[in-house]
Image (cartoon, rainbow, N blue to C red):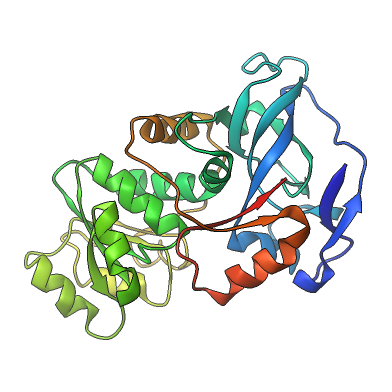
Length: 306
């Protein structure tokens, strides 16, 4: 099969389109013919070796955890799916090697759900990691109907999905973004504010009594800023500040969860969740996809197609 792989830790310059053997399909797994693969910042951070202290990584390394495709073969005791099923998922195993930047990927059934009919292949491939991250963060802070949540980096891949999930729950959303993305946030149902100096004052103009919860999808002091605005200091979750728990909040690391994926699919099919995709590139242009992502100006998702 064709795949984008690295022979050792490196950068986008080390990515190669290569021929590799088809992955084995273990019990509890299915083989997925990949239609599209989502691109996430963790992909190049993993390739650079930043996660080596906490993750078992084997080479040649095929990057990518986000996938949308069609079940081609079913392993032993994997009756949750059948050949021909359209699926999407966050395919992270106990070790890292056979990722989604390939024509085929073997996926544990716990990492997959049926693809929402309302989303195309590219949108479905962009949903799992970002959607599960946002969904898990929202559950961590216990966000409920009628509450006000502040979402930092609300126009990004995770943030844009977090806005929609929070709105679907019946929450009021205040989202930080650059001014060029304010119209985009309004379309998603959020009230935009410009990030940077004076953010606390700008949020208080919209919510004089403070906010019920906050979600930090950017880091750079967002947890500290949020705690000046929160009614309860513990109702902040961060995916970017490793000291969030020490500061009284929650540090969130996304995990595969079939039930949460199915919940995201239900929201999409109900017309309450879409996935903004800004860049779609063929698999062979994975290095360019990383280059675009590293520039830090993407609204929504970057996706590779096969």
